[in-house]
Image (cartoon, rainbow, N blue to C red; front, side):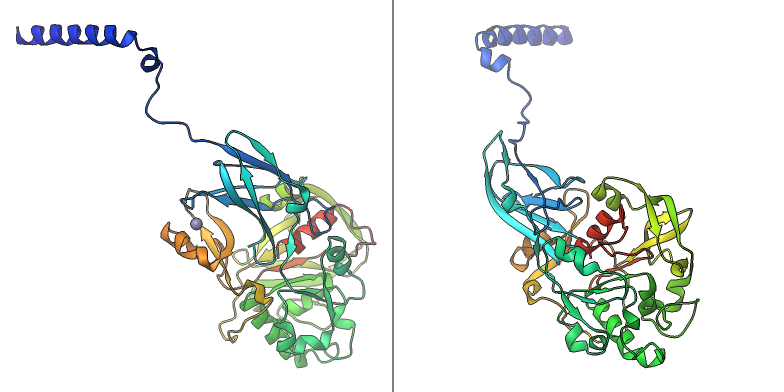
Length: 396
Ligand SMILES: [Zn+2]
């Protein structure tokens, strides 16, 4: 009985309630308490400094008042749309870990609207001090300058002076640079100073790109490297072996195996022309140390590492002092870990939501090493390696 009367009363109450409520339409159509977040977005196109060359694979990000990060990447055409909350925003654009190329701009994003950022706002500024050692064949400096950036020529003997090297964030070693002077080519063991300096440079955050014969800086040898475990080089022997026995050929449909690189350039196969014989084939590499970026039938053609650290290298500051008040962190809040470089003033807020110092992968303080078996002379037949080489420059 009790049960029935209770049920009856509940039904009656519900009936009464619905009768009353029926007169108030606004309540009837109301939805669950969760309100959809207000949205706004910004669209733009990332360019290198010259304002002409689109940059794919750049990270675009901003924050809300609670330091929640909103981010996206530019596609192979440089285009992006970043969704965030309405309001006044600082939008950051970075490539690599954000220490060498970055820009930021302020923009107001009204609720429910998509605002297009002017192209003058989305050009990547050069933070890195860059130098190259002239080669007998490669000319990476042309590609750097064609992007609108400045680069300083240093010579082989400058590599023996740590004070000179420490001025730079990035050093490019063009194929054949070890044949530019007599020193080193005939007495490789006297190059110990250079190997020690390059080890110190990378350990302290400097980045290096070497091509073809200049693998000798990494693995030893005179003007090139003719086998494994030969004297010299700043890398320990087990990490890499390269032998100068490549023959002039074209590798058709080589694979871009690194997803970030493929997304940035917009294709995942390409033909690579090796227009000279005796190029440096990669015959062995340590897979926990290197990321293979491009390969052909399991033969690595392009590799990258940010794992190098020499425990006996001294600690010193390298590169542009513009980074002195900046810090690279792994932002983890919200799921996907993302490496960003931020002003130190913003660090406590990020540490507060669980971020960690240093990049999300690789050895914390060290720089990046890129090595390509293929050349980079812009006037030659570099074909579809051109966007790959631009990626290397912007992601060192
Ligand atoms: Zn954070």
